[in-house]
Image (cartoon, rainbow, N blue to C red; front, side):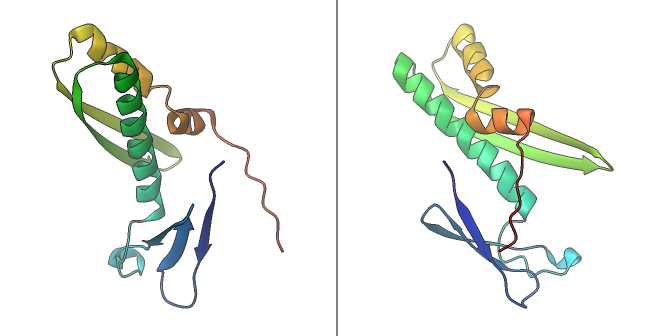
Length: 128
């Protein structure tokens, strides 16, 4: 289970976050009225997908004893009207053969955060 808390006061629009036990800050850029003190909420979504992808590929390669020396994941989220497009680019370093590279790309399509984003999630809001 994952957990996060967000608190905002009257400062536009810096948000104090705690994700698990880790303090973070989110904000909007000046064009949207913020001070760019941290990533935007959509950038945090991209970061979550990138982190999950990198971690999952590292774990898989380690279990298989594959020579994966590094993983670079670049994620873009484009929003146009009601359309959302996430583009993920993988750069895998190491003496991997083509079948290993293809398998890692396949695994990337089934990471936990990838599946959450693809399948969606029910959001229940409780006003306290």
